[in-house]
Image (cartoon, rainbow, N blue to C red):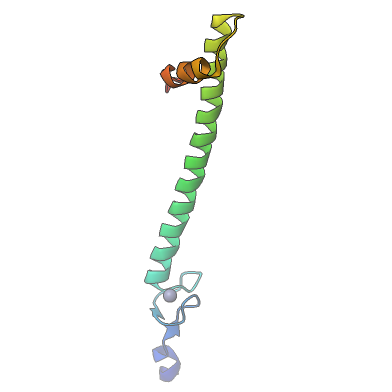
Length: 93
Ligand SMILES: [Zn+2]
């Protein structure tokens, strides 16, 4: 009985470090920390992608509104490129 109590439980993820307590999953503190960091990185990546997609949509709408104000007319491609580059872009609300 004493032998069982003293037997160390190894981390089920890395298999190297001893696990203390009864928490599940049976991961060591290093693996838990690494998992939390990876999860945060994934969440940040998702947030960044959502922000990028929203920015693309906002820029399209902004440019469409600016060109719509100009009405009909003929523009050289270089003029259009210049108008796009001079556009202040959408405002962050
Ligand atoms: Zn581990």
